[in-house]
Image 1 (tube, rainbow over the protein chains, first blue to last red):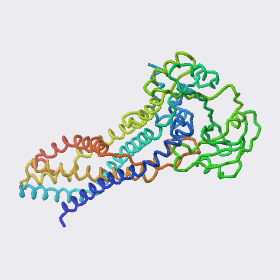
Image 2 (image 1 turned 135 degrees about the vertical axis):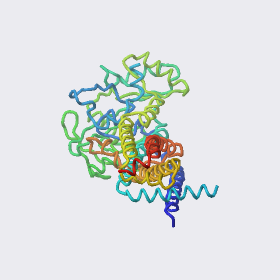
Image 3 (image 1 turned 180 degrees about the vertical axis):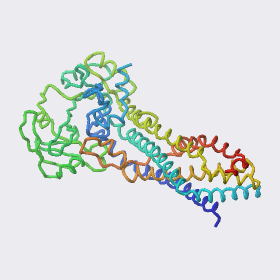
Image 4 (image 1 turned 90 degrees about the vertical axis):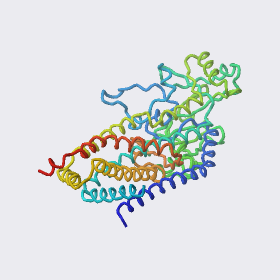
Length: 99
Length: 378
């Protein structure tokens, strides 16, 4: 087999695998819908407001409920006290209040 | 036509042999390139999946939440505020919510304590999230000792464990009765954590929220739309510190790619010189460089995207876990629904393959226009 044929075989397999991933993701997302509806029911029944993505700080545990967070509150180099705080942007409700 | 295809195949054959001769250098490039695609793809898949999941499951959040603010901080709200809010035209119902945080020194973890409306619990009963059960090793029927606000121990019996499927919502949740909550935190009967408002006409939610703040100036109203928009904005891959970090990585990669393409080794220069001396045109060398770029970028792109997909949806985004987990010991164990589309793949292609191609065009052209006589004299 020529080297170029091997390359096209590799690229073709890559494209097929990518297409398979897209199709599989589509079907898994469809199959997950009842589970997502079940989670939505949990939110409604318990009156929850946020996803539990991080439990280290209240403003990253309840993103939508966070209040004004004072920057530099611990020491001058502490841009944010908690690692998770540096990856989440502040919620719109707080930004709106500063407009 | 067939001749032209055959010519390209020959050039590709030669390019692959040429790449194989310097396999160490090219493998390093493919590894770095794959890592860049993998990182960008992982961020994109993770944020998009969370965004879509949040949009579906947070549709049931309260329509309006009213919180009291004192000196910019969330404070307990007097239950009497509910009557003032009920008097506003268009308000269907106002309910008080009791929730708060408890730091457990035994598990070294923060729990979210909440009084549920839908579940009947005795004063000494609790229902815990799967995360708490895992961290504290408590199961149905076990007892947990919590300390009240004044230091007294309270025995609470686990009535049930919340389903592990809902860990993304309830991992750190501890459901407790209203009496139990007030006893634990010393919250009086006259106060609540916040109030939830149900509105008759959903279109009036923003108007009623504005009226509430107008009537009670020391409060803030958070609407359901704002909660949904928060998650939409927070997990926007185009924003946030993540993309700033990744932009740095992509730029560093482009410099690397430029340097790799521009800094032709003496061997590569001699090779191009010989090719031109035996009759290769500048366009032929350019085509060879084009195929070289295609081999590297397409291989890395496919590998990076496929690895990113498995990392996010089958390995629970293991590499992002330390950042989200931070200093906490309780971390939800969740599986995200793979919400990915062709559009995301196209964007990823645009952000990785196109910059690489652009960064290597000029060095490739320089290599193609090299004078064989000059090179072969070395």
